[in-house]
Length: 369
Image (cartoon, rainbow, N blue to C red):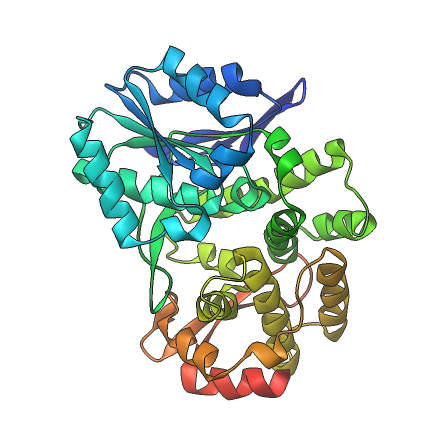
């Protein structure tokens, strides 16, 4: 089914065509009331709604409580649960706590969840919705750039294990994604830069023109109108891939560009690195490997290293590839038997997947860098 979208008065709506699991991603300076109305319409008539909020966001953003209160006027039995901040909510213990809280508060199979926060909150909310009472509805209000362009779209949900990132999870599509770019006004600079890593990834794998836009803007404040177009372009890339391959049986693997090495670096750092920072490093490693294997245009590595650095992202991957990181690549979710499905980018806007034996991948990476 073709990708459909509509724009009006600063509102962009992109349909995710997945049959009975279809939904819409709305990108708009909507405000609390409009966001609540949109979410309520998408959820239908739930028997109750639990609102899961990143605790740090709840403290810092004045937009959160008005949104919760607006939801309470449009949905029944609205109660708020604050989650551990950031990646710390992505544990099985945190999921157990949420599911126990839902049960204690009497939420049944007709209930729904609403997640307000960044990518970790989206992942936690979606996974809790996927497994509580064997599956209930949910919607997300992404409040970080990374969540808006990547984590909240596509139905991948999950949590981390000590062994690695996102090793427990489920595919569970939301009923709606409501993204208000105004939330980004209070986003720390470091987190905004981290989100840009996923935008660069989108450009590299499917939209070369997006890279041109980023290069023209990098190093200076991005005008609101340009940022809105950048978010839309990145979401379109994600939605187009997901619509073609919902459960990652083929093409969807390209969305993991930079993530094989990136996830390993992120986990090895004890999650002190932000996800986007780790993906930046992973993309540099993947581009270098592509050059070494004769797949990637040599100039692309130089070009993207410069762009990522100008965006405020780390690019010094070589000294980070210690034994711990290399070992963690063996737990990559894309591994099949002794091979990792590694994503390479020959040229801007094009991505391919190659099966590389893990024993070959490690020395090739070290040699490439």
